[in-house]
Image 1 (cartoon, helix red, strand yellow):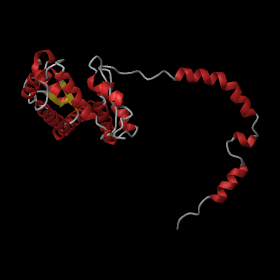
Image 2: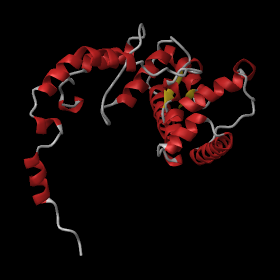
Image 3: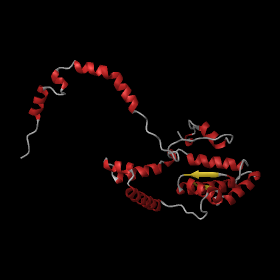
Image 4: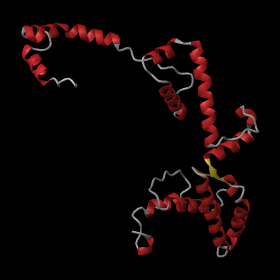
Length: 246
């Protein structure tokens, strides 16, 4: 059901709260085309027109540059539309928002984080003239770092790398594992090297506990069964063996 049908949406109350209730935060989860961007624009307008904050004090974060540009353009359209019919007391708020729109923090998370780092490079311990790599440059850098690390480790021949290669772990597989750690680095505690669980002693204890039972079961088998395969089974396997290729 859509509003055009003359009936309310089933989540109309929740939408209204997300648009106008500024006393708490809201998490909105919905599929494509259900009005998330429209709802966000209305919440921004409510913040501006109620005087709760100026547009220069608001950060609206998106995932892509395209979405950020769309959000800014649609917000401008709404502000310009309201400027022609808003009450007199709201016009200064609308005009100020239009003036601040181009410099507003309606952007991607990367750009927002970058602006914070450039404002406080000393506290963040970064070069204020740093640049953000695009996807292609990042791939080249990761490949260069991998090659430098791998060949230096081969020269040093640490036991763990030598053992991994001996056991059949290919360099390509090691590279994939390195990429996985890089992509999920937020899940790895810095400087942590988790110890594997100590399972050997519990296994030995369990084996010692069950050993009498295993010996009893083994003793109940016929002599042929103790050898693993009975003569009849071996004969059956010989009959089913494929003929050699000529």
